[in-house]
Image (tube, rainbow, N blue to C red):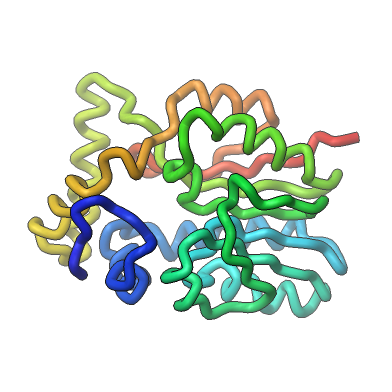
Length: 222
């Protein structure tokens, strides 16, 4: 894939090669996608509403298709990039919209898979609080995202773990470096105080690989 000098999903080459690229860059992608879908199935009720926020090409929707059909549930896939949306292949309704501006209805499950690191830092917390406020009792938000490097020698080891994982997929060193150098300004890992916020919101961590982590946040609405 031709890596843009400034990373964007509004790029035809990125959209065309996304499914291959993401699995090369993140060797755990399929396993953790499956885990996210596993947890989502536990919170989708009959005739429920599910949001896939930052849906890309529809990976999560495809994983949930049978559960959605069996429970007569509705999936709304939200994707900001028209180029990515053109490659969407999955169930439900696709909406091309900025997640920050979208008017969410009350829902049962929302999946935010590698989304928040691409949202402006100043708007993340309020946006997530609004999303939590729309989640029905008995529902959940499933998050997978990138945290800031923890620092120290352990942080160095985490950074090398990420590189080693990419190399293990056969990705060329040139593409790995090009991707890293394209990300400044576009991708901003979540600060560690976000983990404290997740915990205060009742989050359960189900995944950790270096700086990447995943949580299930159950609705605490009464």
